[in-house]
Image (cartoon, rainbow, N blue to C red):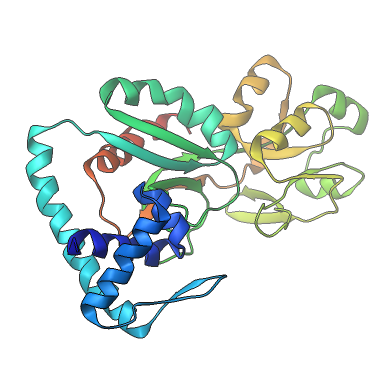
Length: 299
């Protein structure tokens, strides 16, 4: 038995919560991974995982073994990296998850610079406004905006995005230009951004002279993806509140008109997020550093 390979296989099953996902992330057949874990259990003479047809759970002994061996794996990777970084360019595969408009308006237009700097790194982008499970989905990092509520993740700030409230000229001609946020309650049609996970519509937020206002009204249209949300606004379906970077071209050519500008909400913070219990390879470190360097001027 290759004990080190078996420990790696076991660790990925624990992190992914599935033999199939773990095998995919390690690029090995499911049967091979299962055999490695069985050999490790036989070597230790202890059951590490409980398997049923529907799920895999970690036994108390398995949890203790994972905690002790994961530290060894991270230390070993740190030793390898310390030798490799000095004499090699960062290379390999990165899986990055990012929201729709952030991908199309911010990250992807900037990526040619990163790819030119690091030609040996390959990137797969998962583009969706729906949150992912970074461990089970084997994602290296996530670029997201908003408050962070998961203490098991490491987050580095990459900048803040201005928010704007806007509508098409035809809409404003038909329904009028609101002078105050409360006027949105009087006959105006709002296009809500709906959170993909919960289905909850985000309220329209405003800020002036330190005073915050939230407008919660029945929306006519709700969209749970940021590019689709922008498209609904451009189609004249109603007033939208969105990121300034997403609306910038339409505002510049007059397709959209910003309203309630004195009440712009507070800037929206963005972070690059990655698991704290996973080794950070050289390719991910340079990507995160590049995001921190590049994105503040693009958000």
